[in-house]
Length: 271
Image 1 (cartoon, rainbow, N blue to C red):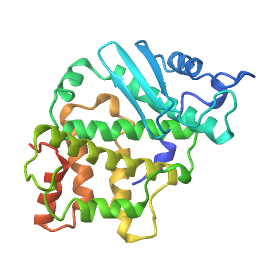
Image 2 (image 1 turned 45 degrees about the horizontal axis):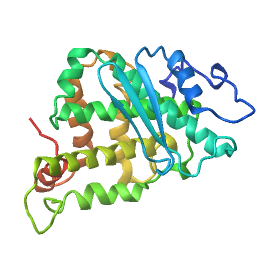
Image 3 (image 1 turned 90 degrees about the vertical axis):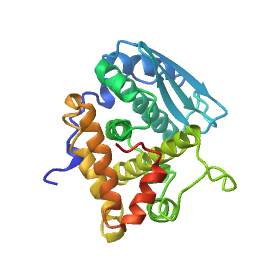
Image 4 (image 1 turned 45 degrees about the vertical axis):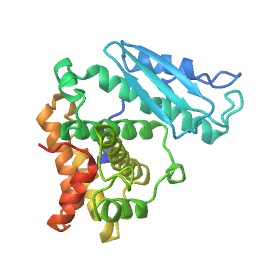
């Protein structure tokens, strides 16, 4: 590529733009309200803190007019956070608010096309770019460290080139049938694997760049990054192209039979 992906994001917000800490501690609700204002988000945003979930358990749910952000805060005392915890929770909340902003800005027609209850290649591509955007922007202001990552490059080598290519996977090995619910579980798991690879790339500034075995991972994320600046103009077909390009790059040197098995195990309805 002819550019550095880490110079792509001309951030609209900086640490100095955001609210100062109160002496009494960090207030997640207040922080979300400030981000909502700074990001010019109009929809209702609710925050739910789950003290029984780890800080890796975070998600944003959306409907037509509102969003619910769920964040795991096990081990967090907001009146007495460590410096690492403070950066981590700010990164998490910022990340989820980027998801809210991007969902709000998605044209209604495209929203209906993507979220139509089907495991499409376009939905997969949208998820990839949406999480790339959230990880990139959150880590520009509140950078995570490699130690925060819950995956390793070696894990992705195993997942993509062993786990997903050695045969058709089933929820129950004794029942060689995949229901629609099973297919969605495989689809969601595959998305999580691919998004985890994106997170590792952004936080670490690349994945073992000097080792050829990981070159496909770097190329897949770098190709994805090229869509970031013009994401507001993307179409349904563009997202399908993004998804296919990402997978094709990862599996380009596998045998034809391994590629077929890989695609089958993604849960994606490939049309």
